[in-house]
Length: 74
Image (cartoon, rainbow, N blue to C red):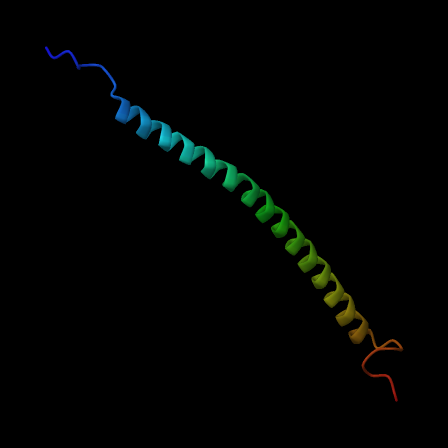
């Protein structure tokens, strides 16, 4: 049997180390990106909900015919 069987070469160790460093950098970049994405999604959903509620309120006001509505005489 060969003397090098079961031994890990220095070249392989450096490649594994490089892969681990690249993975760590990827995780460090991805975590803040995901946090910002979720924050912006939450802001967008909130603004859309408020805009929809405001639109429904305006439509209800216009349909009611109360003063200040669309059928008000000028």
